[in-house]
Length: 188
Image 1 (cartoon, one colour):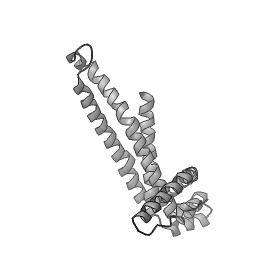
Image 2 (tube, rainbow, N blue to C red):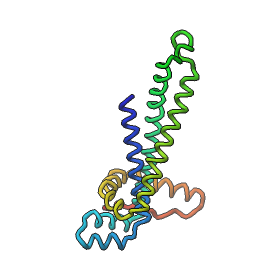
Image 3 (spheres, rainbow, N blue to C red):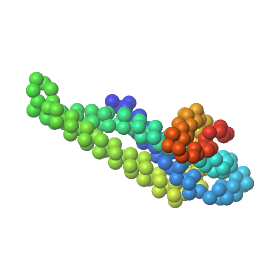
Image 4 (cartoon, rainbow, N blue to C red):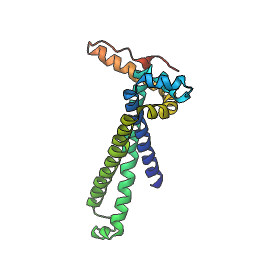
């Protein structure tokens, strides 16, 4: 259970990273990064190159946010609910059940409290705080996130290619023009 909680916290951190990267890239002025890059800043140079392929990298941040959020829900709520359920049983609520089993409502309470805690953590730490930081300091966050974001883009490129292709297929089925996603091409 502790491992699942640690993995859930890693999912919150990953979500925060991708949200910060997404908002920083959307907010940053490429000319500011270019000036820093001309001064010899390698992270600024990498971030500047990323801004030239913004659509592709924003698709990567969306994939990262989605995967981290799904992982958090999959791991976090059940693990936290299990801990809460154990705590409720320790304070004697299990004795209210029959045949040594805790009453069914204990799991309902634990799941509700666990879901609420995970949701608050996800929204505050995984979404709102990184968004605010990225809006306040887009150059710093763009530079800081450029190396891991570029690595994630490279590793996730096949998935991005399939997802963007699927999106275009659905658009064509709806008789709408398909978008030319930058992620349709591998960008180093």
